[in-house]
Image: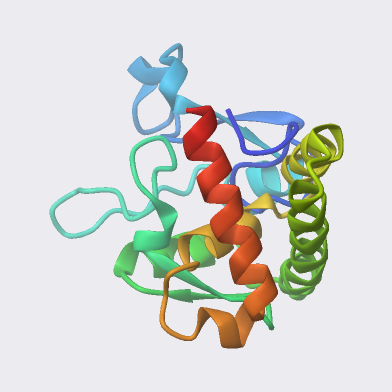
Length: 187
């Protein structure tokens, strides 16, 4: 339902304690029991931010990024060093606004997660090079259990981007490539 262990699908920070009807029941009550319409959310994002908001464009198409059908990175870009999301489309604008993804606490958390991820990736690569498979697995599991796992996925996506070694450091890019190769090998 969400990346990591029970994290909010929207902010990625807090533990998911609520089930959000992505398309609100007030708009479409027929989706009440449709599994794909149920997303894990924290109470803050669900009750204080989104509530029944579901903005649509002039054609009636939803403006929120649907994480069950779309890649969020098509609509938002993460500035790693600041933790800020920059919209890349009208859906990105609406999603950032509705879920309050530009909250200072979230931006700080994502920026800190970037630093943690770089450190953990260096450790991952060192353990991989030493052939310590149990330590490699420990690091991999920890990567997915931390808050803001979306930062790690954004880093994976940007591994081949021009300037990645400047932003991440050459050793971290090497670790990201090793992570991808290991994932491919494991299928």
